[in-house]
Length: 325
Image 1 (cartoon, rainbow, N blue to C red):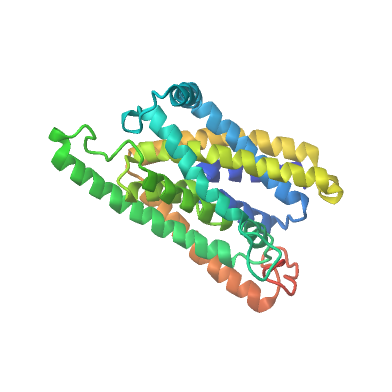
Image 2 (image 1 turned 180 degrees about the horizontal axis):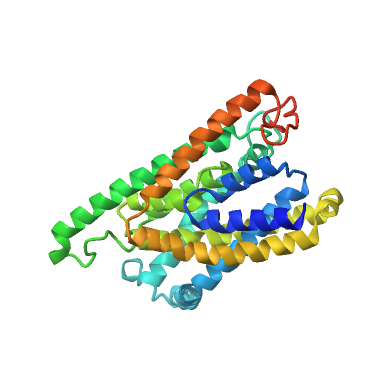
């Protein structure tokens, strides 16, 4: 991998991790076009996610710090019998719902009958595919989810406006999550983790809006919710590198570091851009974009499967569309 390849992928990761267009999908597209592959590429992808994790922490450092302090206060209240579910403040509600929202991730460790794989391994299988048909279809699903989210957000605003005189929630939806809200968002995060092309930020935002949550609060929740998931993914990938000498030998240090730095800087800017698009109700641009890219990729995938070669590099696709299944 060249330095230029690392910079390009860092920019793609930083932009697409937070904009609702799927970072994993766009990394798959970029790597497909560049012809970048190999075992070390999975590790490089995780390191790019670490770069965007730095961006989240930098952007939300005040909220994250307040959540950390409230967490320890909550633990103290639990042990002294002062904790009351119905009297949780915003920070405490967010902490509890973040924990609940992470529970569906344990579904990824369920074994798949008839194989040696677990559910989480499907992400590697789809990422290693020589064709982008799964990514293409998933991008179209992202487009549909974003459109539904826009419709639900308008409905929430109309309902809120009718009741704003007698409600503290105003005209923009609820600000507090329920257990069902958190579980729905958590399940969508699992789907986004498995399928390249399903935008984690876009799909979980859409689910929050479907559940009647304020769009800005839903966006904050989905960004903070992704932090533990990214840390866990990086830890597991790091263990694979330590345990597998062949993977460790394929890791290129300088491009990896440069890619991380680029993804962190671009990611910080992307968060700001996304919040502006959401605030000004300009989300339809992402609906159109993901739909157009998804349809175009379906066409490319059909051509590649019929010719048996990568349309951009000319490399043969091989005999298996989904190696490992």
